[in-house]
Amino acid sequence: MRNEFILLRALIRRILPSLAMPTAVMLFAVGTFYLFGSGSTSPLKNTAAAQGVKVNGPAIDLVGGTDWLNTDNPITLADLKGRIVLLDFWTLCCINCIHTLPDLAVLEARYPGVLVVIGIHTPKFDNEKKTASVLKAILRYEIKHPVYNDAEKKLWRAYGVNQWPTLALIDPDGNFRGGAFGEGNLELVERSIKALIQEFDKKGTLKKDPINFKLLAENNASPLLFPGKVLADAKSKRLFIADSTNHRIVVTDLDGKKIAIAGSGKEGMKDGIFAEAEFSDPQGMALDGETLYVADRKNHAIRALDLKKETVKLVAGTGVKNLLGKLGTAGSAKKIALCSPWDLLIHNKLVYIAMAGHHQIWTFDPAKSHVSAYAGTGWEELKDGPLKSAMFAQPSGLATDGKRLFVADSEISAIRSVPLVGVKGNVTTIVGEGLFEFGDKNGVGKDVRLQHALGVAFLDGKLYVADTYNSKIKIIDPNKRSCDTFVGDPAQKTFDEPAGLSIAAGKMYVADTNSHRIQIVDMKSREVSTLKLQGVDPVRRGSVVSEKK
Image (cartoon, rainbow, N blue to C red):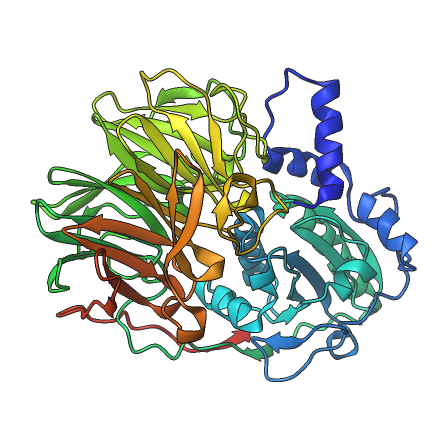
């Protein structure tokens, strides 16, 4: 979220200190109170007006960016006259933006030809300014509409936007009709779209014919597609790969030879035998004997794979996103909705969950089929202290030394330390300074800068961090708080936004997400090689052309 909005959050916390409300839910409240339409006093309307954009007046055209993606040609509002246009100001790192994408897909499917969604990608991190990074995000999240890289935030400023995500609605005459902040605004937006359809149908100026956009296609020879996490197990000599955008789990030996594949490759949520099961963007995994637990991210669920029987079943979550990550939430695992679980770690039979969507750490007890919010208020911020008052920002990676849980807290580019259940202590920060403090700087303590780190592993007193947006692996001493580069040279393309890593038998296995591969790092020599997958076939994918009918 933007700095301006942090001030509002701080004010609300001062006014209502007992309120434990996560950022996403607060944004939902803002969105529902400030409606589209001429009768609204939306903050977006006010800020846009300050920039010279009048409600019911001409919208600012789509200029000032660097590149158009998911379309052959640049797009102007004149090209879209007669259609309803919804601008989505987003950035690829933001969990709230990621949560908004399915809502946009629903609207596109319901109003084909009538509605055109345009993604306006406005970066937070330096790495997100790169068109190549935006392109990969479009493919990873399977975005089916044009995206404009607003790398210098010229459109962002022109529309007076100050928060991700923000939606701006433009009518078929090209007039700005207002906007909404945050996620959870599907019903609000749809009501506004229906009103515009009725208004312009009466005028006879609403276009409904198909409009085509040529979508990007990934030039990828690998059977993997944006693998998000990897888990290596030395004892059983197995490797578990979250083949995230192929919506499946690939199991091989440590040399890459296929053992099994769980998931048909079709996105969905279906239990059953491996060949028929369905996942949606699976991420982190935790192994307990012959049971593999999987963070089924987009399904907001935890799935359990029986590796002997080769079956999949739901063990936590309802399959529906829950925006409200309240303190004290606890209960039956399959009755409480989760929110974008991104990584898992098992210790003493208890599964710890990096609940990225709630900005919290949760626990899951498989024996009791019980989940609970363990650490974090749900506010998106960096704050140390007791478990119940500490704050996180999109935690996405977990590791442990047996006493502490180490967390890759991605939106604050930080590594945090959390006491395990039964261990006294507070949440502390090893490296990281806040939501808008990031970079690529080694050193000690406050001098260290990471950039949206998504993964962490522990070995022999040291932490190894997937410094994702720097495309490097860093090594951190958690006690000295010192940081150095372990391996990775962006110029040599050693990695491209690595998101997960796991160490076993003297090797580090790295989910090199944007390169669609698993890289192997020799822990002694630091030599890097690519895992050669054997017997793993790619998933057949459909047409690369989107036709709105």
